[in-house]
Image 1 (cartoon, helix red, strand yellow):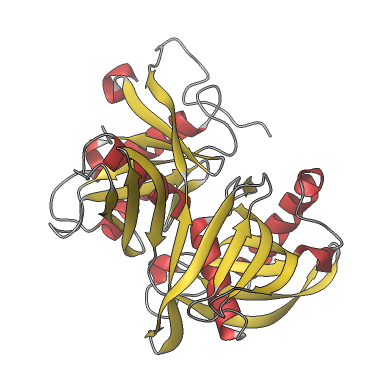
Image 2 (image 1 turned 90 degrees about the vertical axis):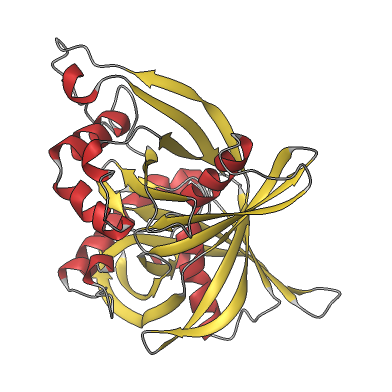
Length: 348
């Protein structure tokens, strides 16, 4: 096993409390020439080496049930600085806003992408759902915040009624780089708060599995983006507030349960894009307005609409989500060939 992977160097960051483990020395299976990042994700899903390395870095004792990270890979072409394959304990995802924010901050802070001491630098990243941009704002040589401009987000289905263990609910399905079910936590008798996390995880799993079994989240143009990735439970903090310039600020709290019961500690970047698409379609969020999106741990993203457009003939919006990311540390993981628990295990 040591010969297969060797020591693995990682750079760990977090965005709004959600971990992002960056792997510059990615498995050879996913770094070959001539593939798009979307194609590399399929290769990774089929590669024993890539899956083994992902499991090693996500699973205990090197990770945990809610670990998240990404393999750096070549971009689709010279128009982007980086390519990345996002991963978690259950596989490889199509999009990740908090990871894009962390990558942008790391790329500038590490000098990989040159940036002025004061100003904004665009770090262009190819991800499986398309090309995105992390606009990194620096002041006095330090990263202040990062604005993630996503692929176009759209509403996929509205008011899909389904039975759950806590009663029948109506959910919306929206695409923000991945497919999400969105519903108020209150419809299940729950709150977006740490005390309710176990019940929210159970409900998120139930909703995701039922909608996927029903084929309710099929992408209109690319089957690789099909399938419900997560469930966003929302809660209004304050009614919309009118600002001095006539625009409005909405203040919501959310928790996103993704993959097989993983909990996003951040307000979830791609999930926030999906929520913005729903709010825009309902007329609740207009260009110039801002969504203050708070996570279950109190971290905040600020989101807005930058463009109204169409995607695959469907009304869509381009969103910009601003958040902060911070370095946690660096790691050098090794494997003892006598270790019978490699690549690891997951206990929740």
